[in-house]
Length: 164
Image (cartoon, rainbow, N blue to C red; front, side):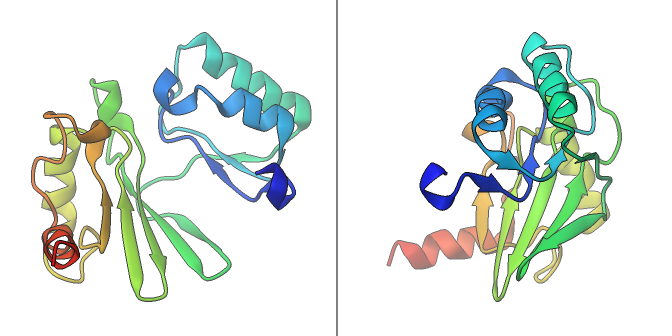
């Protein structure tokens, strides 16, 4: 990041678990961050409190986005798909974000687990060309058995074409 000038246009915190925000304070202290997208459900982790204090001290603008909202950075479009509601399981409160860049799409699922995934499939469907149909999938919850319960069709096609 320092070699690129240390400038970050938008820093997205998917949810306030240590393994997802652990390096955020360092990034905020060493880079020029223009905007922080805060998690939809605040955390109780002391690291999260320190991050919020640093954001306030530097007067960095923040936003929290709801499903259907998004933004553009250059030619990239980010659309926030979930969480669809507040869940009991903190992982299900992770942002799920679709990135569209030209002809390529990617789905970033944070740590969303089966309950959130089921509700996303119910709302968005699994049809080709839909929100959950992507070329690249960042599997849920680090690939654990509690997430990525039903892989989008395009991911299977991508894996199949890469293995040729």
